[in-house]
Length: 448
Image (tube, rainbow, N blue to C red; front, side):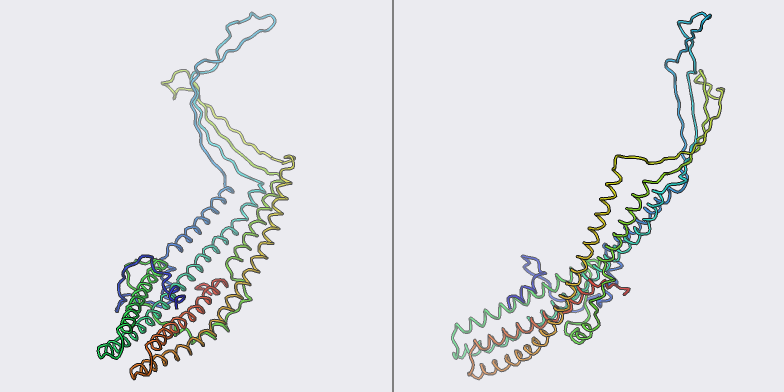
């Protein structure tokens, strides 16, 4: 019983002294499907994933801009503080030791230039990575969606378990209350000792304390679900259904799951895309061995003069040039060769890591299925045990009323009923929780 109670109270805040009672009329009645849909529309996690997808799209468009001409304008002004001098010394000519000043005081230059890659293997190889980058970003967004669906699903199931367990604790409290009332009557008549009445009273108070703690667990688990859904914490919600409804579909759910199909597993798909990225990276590195060709055009207008107040009177003249540049890599000290070796080893490491990842995923899938099978067996055992425990409580109470049973028998029967109820709820929760984790592993989302 302590183990079940610990599981029940794990979502409660430590030190919580009081909590509101369960609401009779919650304002928002939701099913599991509706909870997931609200979460996918309002959760910050999904919005962040969408922003990242947009960022990758803009990044790819930024790379595409390198295919277009790069055009820029420039302008400069130069003031000669000390002009340059020319000195002449030819045979038969008089020497000019002071030289002759040349140039103008002011020089103004304005121009425009353009460059365009003609043959650029590295640029072309880089652009081929755009599609893979976008696919990886899309798969990452899908991974966020799958994770959120799993979190909302398990939070929804947790609330159902808390509510059903609250009902178990409430039933236990009512049983203890009825038993205590019988003992109190017997104590007033003098047929039982004060010690026995005190034990019954303490047991009743403990049952009430457990019921209040169960109420707190329900409220805290609802807060967790509302946080995952991205709605206001003040919004009151009411969930449809209970755990026992999932018992009807246990065998069908187990039979329809194919654990051998991991094609939709998001971790594997992301790994495949990263491997593709690595292949593209190797292609980019290989392209650096190839020559590149680029064209450029430059046009300038220059004006010179000595009067800084009459720029319009300066003599202005244009200059322009066009160029084609060819770059051929020949030798870089073996750096590119050893870089290609590193990339190849990294590729081999990633392939081995993918094999290891796939084996671990297959192991996890088998563990989840095994847990589901064992949970079905536990459900049947606990359901039968709960029915017998309820019958035992009725019999022991009647025997105690007739004076042929002891308080210890009655107390043990009530305790067994409490433990059987909690174990029954826990076994159903274990099944649907393992099923939710398995669906996440298999990559199940809203679209498949």
